[in-house]
Amino acid sequence: MDTFKKLMVAGVAAAMTLSAGAAFAKEFKIGLITPPKHTWSKAASAFAEELKEKSGGKHSASVFPSRQLGNEAQMLQQMQTGALDMAFMTVAEVSNRVPNMGAFYAPYLAKDIAHAAKILRSDAAKEMLKDLPRKAGVVGVGYGSAGLRQIVSRDPVENAASLQGKKIRITPFEPIKDFYNLLSTAPTPMPLPAVYDALANGQVDAIDMDLELIWKLKYTEHAKTVVLSNHMMFPMVGLVSAKVWKDLDKADRKMIGELMAKHVDSTIDSYVAGEAKFLAEVKKTDAKIVMVTPDFFGTTTDKWNSIWSKRAPSLAKLRAEAAK
Image 1 (spheres, rainbow, N blue to C red):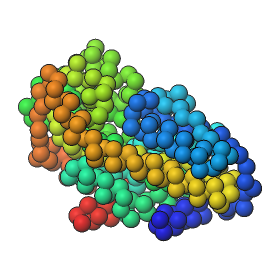
Image 2 (cartoon, rainbow, N blue to C red):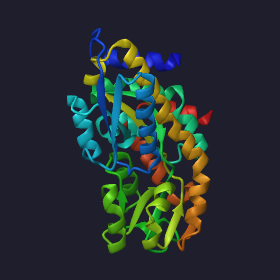
Image 3 (cartoon, rainbow, N blue to C red):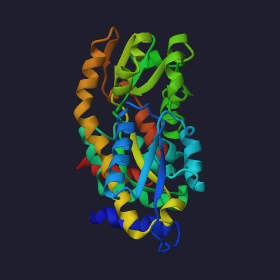
Image 4 (cartoon, rainbow, N blue to C red):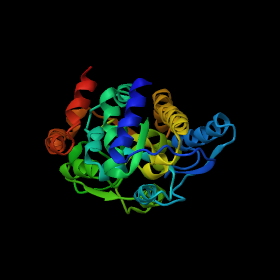
């Protein structure tokens, strides 16, 4: 908890001079892109419930899943102006504003989902939150996670050459775009709600996705192959608008920060516990499971590291944490 408190103080000091802030009741809005039954959305709802309880009804929060308040870029803009209070957001979107956060997407930084959990809870990861108020206009209270990334293909996949030239749906951010460009594919940014139909009608040939959504959103209905690669982490971060944060009194900042950190962190445990189940469910489908090692991607990983070691200074520290 000492590290958390230091982050809160350092992060806000980098963004603004804190005012004393009179205590006031508020109903917060929390935005997400994930559907209501997704692990992140459930964690946001649990945070809202506990916030109301712990504040004695003084504060409440309404959760808006499934991009109801816009895509992540739009929600981040809303938080910068104070129009949106909070979000559980992919680190991917934040990395578009703060490239250093792209370090989390180093291919094979994590060996497995449990290893990814340790990296996200490391001091090196927490240290990276300090830049967010100044560079993105938000306060980061802690990390959550989705599962490791896999590739779902409409066509058979024998090796990396099978993917060359293929249109692969990605989350729209630079680290993963660079990875698939280096793999000689055609990375195709696309919002989550459009993915199922795009895979069905051939608008994309393959998708980059985690096991939970591969199973729950039934992508294997239109795919012959799941490449079980575990090639990237996919972190989430709990965010509060810096404009909203500065108007909270000290006690509310502490309560809200600790509660949100608790619930975003709970998603990490959910994936550590659930990844095996998600994989078992995917294996029940008609899709062929192709298990691969880092060698599958050839020199792509080394080339990515060469590019992003310059863009993301914290990558070296994360690697050191991962090596522990």
